[in-house]
Length: 169
Image (cartoon, rainbow, N blue to C red; front, side):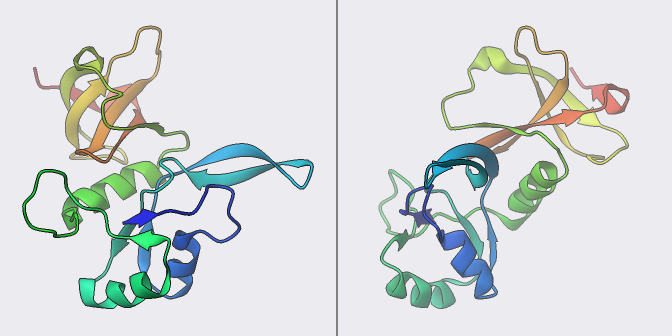
């Protein structure tokens, strides 16, 4: 979904939907903002208008009709006007990876180049046991990070323990 409110808004759609009892997620990051002349650290969405809601369309329609700044997100190039849907297992994997890392790095679509995709690995043991993917390859980066993607939406790089990495090829 899309939340068209600004980052510095007092009540974002994620807050109002979670208070209503819906399962809502958006990748958040800490940002220092000046509010009323005072500098404060606030949690703001990484991508301003990106919002994931795990609910049926009929139930969401009621919230979308009441809130003019809440919209469905659609896929480009499709002939039907169906809202974008992320598979549950992909979303759970992404949420688990991001929430179990102290400092995930987020990338928007197009920010990662082919050169940044490193070796293909499998994680054996630890928090991310069973995850497969590619390592983030950035010159000068000392920490090992696994790339976890929601294709076309957002990519996160989560920190790994080197002991649990098994290189596949």
